[in-house]
Length: 414
Image (cartoon, rainbow, N blue to C red):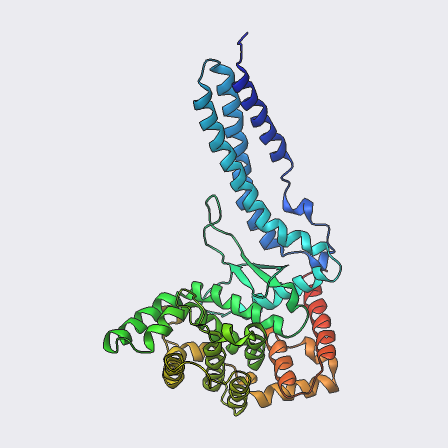
């Protein structure tokens, strides 16, 4: 019988503890106690479980091999055994990190109302991302968390511990629930995933670098620095109209020092410039005087007067070059759009302000009709009605709750 030293015996106990804890990492389907309408899509569940399952199996095999190795080599040094155990524990923690990423999104589905809202957001995200004929959108799951900003862990990006994320996971700030501003945050993050699917960032950077080569030290260098966030904002304005800009204003309405802060390490445009840029996108996509009115309101909230000369000059330069830049963005023809421009594939005649208000008036006459429009367009209608003062915050919240419930129920097998 092998005599095992205390250090080796302790490591064997710890490795057995890893096995015991690994047994507690159950398939996500066993964690989901939500009503059917609140559950994530079957496709998302399938892809996530197929991603996690092999990792658990391999880790279990590695732990078993380690325990056999300890038993077969009683004279091994404690230092060598500790090194091997440490690697196992790191792999175990990586498996847990992956699991927690998805578990956070799944367990919230059992919360009263929250689960239905999240299922509705999943449907909205899928609709806002869809661009038929150009790419197949990955499954999307949403969850809530603290903080003022949303974020996305894009599909097909690296996860902690290795491997590609099988689905897009979007974190939504709780403080934005529930109002039309939630769509602005969500569709911006959707824009990041769509941009990745279409390779828009690299494609546009190549064009902007050519501009910089001709005009060094000009406004083009700033657009190039911020292009990934700008594309996401452009996608949002295209998909939900003025509701996107109103929602953005809600996020970046901060003390003046933050709104005018110039931080070139931040991939987001300067908040003041970002709102002005969003208004300019609206002018190009869906021409109407409302965009100038909204930019005038933003300038009234945060006038440039009082800023130091250098900062004011920078902002004026960016504003003066804004139309030229947004036109370049709207008319860009990336390879994956097969010769079409961004504006062409994202534009919809139904999103013109007058048409959106016509839809809202139709909803008032026949409420059931609001369930017949695509989810992104529904939020475009609500955003337009909000801008024109035709709907109160309470009415808006009530309609959104009804829409989320309807969209969630659509995904339930009948």
